[in-house]
Length: 273
Image 1 (cartoon, rainbow, N blue to C red):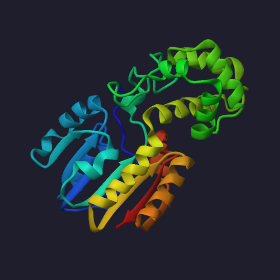
Image 2 (cartoon, rainbow, N blue to C red):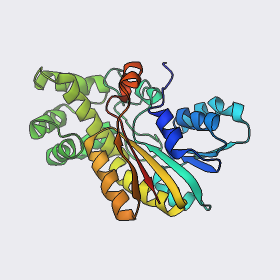
Image 3 (cartoon, rainbow, N blue to C red):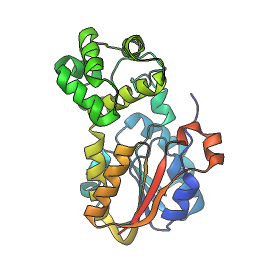
């Protein structure tokens, strides 16, 4: 399995640097946190809903001794989890290499059960939800979370065949999608179901509001998004919550994109309380 490369880690350190409390709400395997611990004197609070990734993060960060703690929880709960005011917070809304290469159904490149849950103990897998949802509901998910073309037709075919694995879903899509932009359209369908099953948009909303409540005055929030719907939610929720813009939609450098293709759609925004 390829090691996960944290996106825009230098920019994160530049804009969120602190010798106080740094909170990584999407710790994953610890890439961003490791950079912050290396480059600043911060104490890191590492939060993630994915317990499997946190086991790896604990090992990766072990060299920093007592400078971090790990909490297994959904980042939407940050407002209730922390009883102290912190200096900087990071939300990275993307998937890690570990998740993409795991057998939990996040990627159409690996044959696995069609699950897609960040926490396999919460909610139902996608394959079960497909059986329960109507064609109209599936179509709405495809439109709302992926801007998928011909969503009603694709929803009918998914409902007709009721796929239970990633490859079964991919084969359905290959059979009925047009050849141009095929991979991109398949990725959009997978993205749509992943966002839906994990309630990602609402969680992002609540995570931003909760972050505002636990940040000290002058504290900063950095958010990395990967598609326009996430980005619009971040802009609106941050504004409505009372955050001030510090950095407007910075993209990764060309050099970083060349080193890490997964970074190409990333966008970093930084806000201050």
